[in-house]
Every structure is written in structure tokens, then in C-alpha cells.
Image (cartoon, one colour):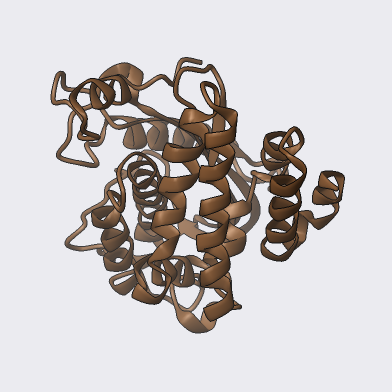
Length: 310
């Protein structure tokens, strides 16, 4: 899978990280799949294949930005919708796993950009119904119908924001603002959750809030430092690459010290544990020790992994 970006080559030549306007191609290449193995056999499973085909088309043919991407620039991502329950009346409940990758410059290595699971996906789907999303009318006519496309649009904009942040300092801001717009205008119904502050501490509301909160603005600097000054230079200069990643960890430590319960911290590290161990396993003793100290505090879930950095 070739994730190399012509954008990055152009940026290096021109001294800019602006994406070139060359051809009319979509921004993402998404794989969408539906797993309905837990749903009663009374439901005609063909509906889920139709849903899968419809959403795949929705994700990959809709223009999500005003920029134009080369085919090789498209962001590779995947969505897996696990249907957990049939609630009746064409309403289903499930969980959505979203993953996206970002290439490290001059290598064939793809670094995890997003690895997240949303446990609160409730939606209504009637076979062959249009799959649509309107940024100016997020709720739609039926909140239960609109909820799935609102969730998908939310995560596409999240992927775009993270990707743009990783190539250009705070370049993802427009997409994070869109997240906030979707949250503030999200479908509202008794059975819908994940869009409100009181729905939990780790949901769509809090992630969008953190990414738009000035108190946590350093997370955008961390994303840029991790990818652009870290992974992108690692192949040519390992020491400089590790320094860039340590700087990213230091930014995150500042956020954590001021906002100890911030969702964006554990969110940042999902899928990155093994990558970080490999990056610092050959570091100098002092740098390896510093990385272990930071990671053990920032990424508690993977604390055991980082013990190998002694």
C-alpha cells in the first residue's frame, strides 16, 4: 500500500507544506466493513451489505475539503462497524472502530495516526435509503437516521485534522472546528449518546472539546513534532528524529500536568506503544531513560511495554 505523498515532496522542494492543486481526487481512501454476526438471523443480512456498499461510496466519493489531492496522497483509513443489537424498527446499535495511517517520509513505513473505538453508535437504516450529510443541517429530518452519517463525518474530519496537523503546524484547525460544529448540532434523541459532556469522559464531545481548547493547544504542536520533526527525519537522522519525538512527549506532559484528565492524552497514544518502543530501544542511555520516564506517565495503558526501555 503506497501512502507516499506528492504533497511532502513538493513541500520539501518549495519550502512549503501546502498541498498542491494538481488533479481532482478525493482526500481519503476508506475501507468500510460491517460485521453483523451478533445480530439475530431474523434480520435479512443483505441489508448490511447494502449499508456497507452505500457508506463506502459515501466516504470515498464525497469531497471533504476544498483542496485537491493526487491519488497517491489519499489518506488510507478503515472503519469497522460491529452491529451488537437489533433494537427493532430498523434501528441498530453497535461500535465503530476507526483506524488511519500516515507515511513516514522516504520510507515504506506507515505510522498509526488514529486508532479509536466508538462504543456509542445507534442508528436507523432502511435498505437503499440515501446516505447523506449536510454540514449546515447535521440533525436531518430523523435524528436516528442522521446519527450514523454525523458520526462518520465527525471521524473523517478528525482524520483530516490529524493528518494536516502532522504536515503543517496547526494546519488541522479548520477540521477540528468542524468537529465542534458537528458536536454542537448533533442529532438528539433519547437513545443517542456520545455527543454530550454528560455522556461520559471519553466520547466525541470531549475529544472535540480537547482539540479546540486553547488550554490544550500544545497537542497540535505535539502532533507536528512527532511526525514532521520526528518520524519524517528518523530514517536520515535517528538522533534528530528521536529528539523531535521527545519534544512531542514534552508538549504532552505539559498538557497532562495542567489537565490531568484530558481525553486527548490517551487518545494520542492509542496504537503507538510498539512504535515508540522500537524508536527508543536503540537510543542513547540518557535519551532512552528520558523517553521511558515520560511514556510511563503519559501512556499508563502501555506502561509494561516501556519497561523494556531500561
